[in-house]
Length: 228
Image 1 (cartoon, rainbow, N blue to C red):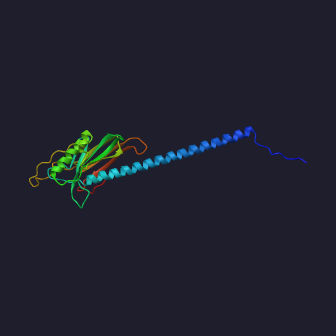
Image 2: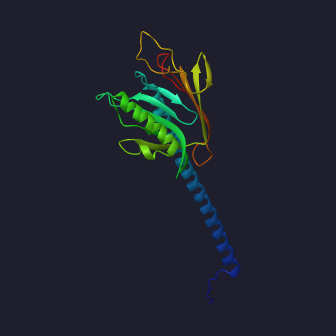
Image 3: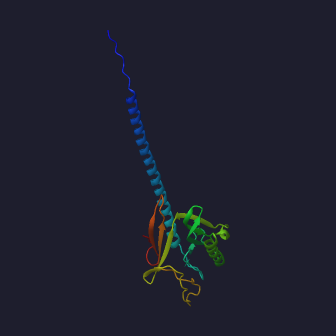
């Protein structure tokens, strides 16, 4: 009576099986790595979109809330920083604030940043806040760091330009000329608001968003505040 002996794998067969398993493991790892990187990139893009949307919403809100105070400047652009005089956000306690926007370098690179003063109610406090905003733009804000003032880094940006809509055309933003004295309103603002403000901002290449974005704002008295 013959007994059957089980035949094992040869060395060559074992090597082939190990090679196939190693190849499958490598392919699977690369697939998982690609999925992980795609998920990370999608999350970074989603975060960048949300940050940009919140930033532009704040930009529009600041422009919508610009207020005209006696013998003050509602808006001022010197080629680097935009300063605005706006209503406070607390309707229960009416007040005014100064806000400023500009590109500034920091530990997190060049970003579009927003500075905001504490609320105030007098023209003397307006002048102080207006000067603090200019100091923030010039020396990094060391002289305007305390007392309720805030400096918030927003989106990365490599360049920005502003245009004013005046006399039915868009022109590069510049310091607005003083308005002629009005005998019927001697306590009016120093300069007149443009009918619109166009923002053109360049977002640098990166893991989130990139390219040039244009957003238009129209003075509410001209129509409805809107952007594109």
